[in-house]
Image 1 (cartoon, rainbow, N blue to C red):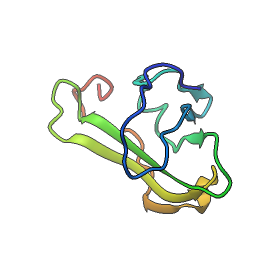
Image 2 (cartoon, helix red, strand yellow):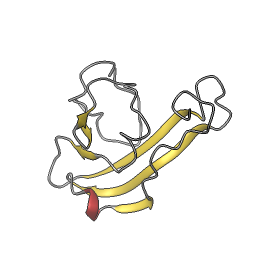
Image 3 (cartoon, one colour):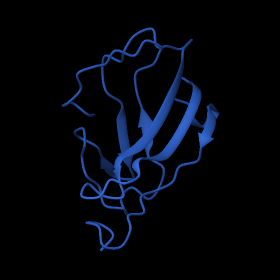
Image 4 (cartoon, rainbow, N blue to C red):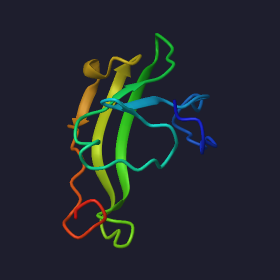
Length: 114
């Protein structure tokens, strides 16, 4: 479970900010801190994501790369990798997909693009 770096936020659209972080796993690699770096191969497939839920609530997931294509040249800024709305509990497959998962694909010449 992610345990560091979370300070909450001031989202006005939600009833309450999460009190704990989601568990995110790419295959056998579990994210253990915020901003953990994975190789493109590790992040190629849609992760498993779980979190504490309230049964009557709907949730959303958005996955973005904040500095695409690289930290040295973030000309695209946020790259949208995945979006799912209206997820009942943690049943991601029952949510409304607004963007299919797109794995990492850094351009040649960047750190992981070789």
